[in-house]
Image (cartoon, rainbow, N blue to C red):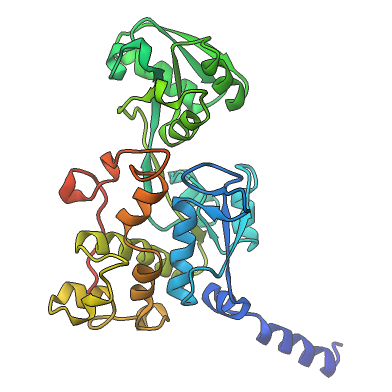
Length: 334
């Protein structure tokens, strides 16, 4: 029979355990955020060991929303193989690691995707000297591609459907593929477009190569959380939507203080002066104000990490807001 002392000890231990991710985060005082081992523009350590990138800034936004301080993040670099196990096991509270939202991952891994912070897709990179500006001009060209990947399959489908010819130059790793393109062993390189922009920076003369505009696959990248905590799922989801709404309403990290005097009901709801505020999420009423003030709206984050103000110089394209010809769109804050 279990002793009374052991029962009381077990009950105390259970009582000490946070019952939700938010409680755990508030108790430990920081968010454990799973990021890549290093992808420029998305999550990459600087020479000083500080993390930067679009995914990193989203981790900071969630910290601003929950703890009130964007610096309260512990970045945990994860390989492709490690990322889902780390999230499932609780090693990380949030996974923001250029990870594609798919049916299988959404239903079989015990995780939920909380939106899309970057619409990606497979693309092509060519040397400017090749003289092409669109993927439809690649007929007859040689293409460096990594073997055993969906990238290789998408490449074959793209050329077959358009009745175009190409010569595949196949390698076992992405590093070998990049090296071969660098050495001129093929005309074209293909992989996810976000990675192409990063690899472009590693070329001897980055301005001598160009990433073509076409996307030949759908790769929606976004934050993921464990599937057992609806409150945390909603916090992460609405943090992203807050950044998108802020851009849509013209509210930035610079102007958000002045917006406290706004009579616009949408802006007042956005920064927690009116409307649902923070109650439904279990957060302080100024949680969304802190996201915008400390990190900024979606455009601010995009431009300084991967956009035209960054070394990558990625065009907004599909990542533009819906009213600007893109597909980024957020449900109303009401």
